[in-house]
Image (cartoon, rainbow, N blue to C red; front, side, top):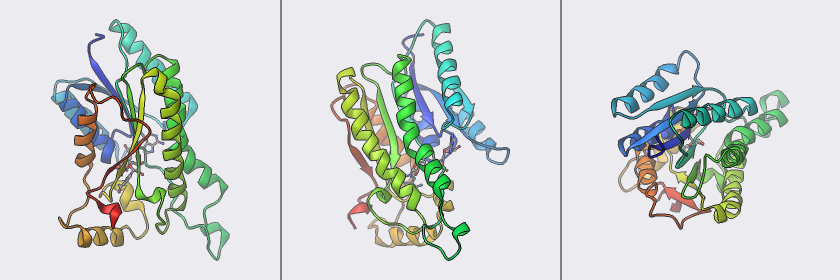
Amino acid sequence: MASERWALILGASSGFGAACSRALADAGFNIFGAHFDLKMTLPRALAVKADIEAKGRQAIFFNKNIADDRNRAEIIAKIQEYFASVGGGTIEIVLHSVAFGNLKPFITDKPEDAVDRKAIEMTLDVMASSLVYWTQDLVRANLLTRGAKVFSMTSAGSHRVISGYGPVSAAKAALEAYTRQLSLELTTRGIAVNTFQAGVTDTPALRMIPGHEKAVAQVQQMHPDGRLTQPEDVARILVALADPKLDWMTGTVIRVDGGEDNW
Ligand SMILES: NC(=O)c1ccc[n+]([C@@H]2O[C@H](COP(=O)([O-])OP(=O)(O)OC[C@H]3O[C@@H](n4cnc5c(N)ncnc54)[C@H](O)[C@@H]3O)[C@@H](O)[C@H]2O)c1
């Protein structure tokens, strides 16, 4: 039915994407979710889907690499087919929350231990540029219309150095630039584009970063509350911002880090 509310979460099976899927379902949204899980981690995607359905909402999930052009076209076609079958519909909220980056250093004694062109291009493509391609195609397919809001996930790495985070740092800087540019070009269509800057959050992606234990200990030590950011901190703010009355915020980096980036 056209009155159903729908969100599209890219990276729905874990971390921020999973928490936002669950919180949006609590707030009345049905969820199209994309994720990329093999046998070991597939149960987490099934658990998110089951939780959404247990809340009385629909969950249509796709286990695909969202950075692949054919997969993007296929998923968008399936979403269009679904809306056609129920008499119409659009996506109100998009969250781009995929973590799939190369975490090698730039400078090493042996070249094979360092980041190379392929690694940098892959990281930028998956973690940043795919936001542009998804937004373009969703707008072209009339799935994002006036009032829709696109969000993504950046980090303090966009403007700070973090050991082993070189390609992801570059992807985050690009993601913020894409956010500004997309917001400019989508303003007249009434579509907002913003990015959340989350603080250090204990997710599978964080645990992949070499030396993440040090970053965790540092935040826990410095934060007056002694805690890290949690995926649910972002999810609560996303749900609040999904309110259609909040429509004049676009092109911004929204910090959800308990103040961590001030230190
Ligand atoms: N964890 C942190 O401390 C932190 C802080 C700030 C920003 N972020 C950003 O938040 C985003 C999500 O990270 P997370 O910590 O929730 O990670 P996570 O590992 O918990 O979840 C990543 C999700 O992305 C999906 N995914 C990865 N590659 C994919 C691909 N090619 N196609 C489809 N799905 C894919 C996974 O299946 C999973 O659902 C990332 O952009 C990350 O850089 C994380």
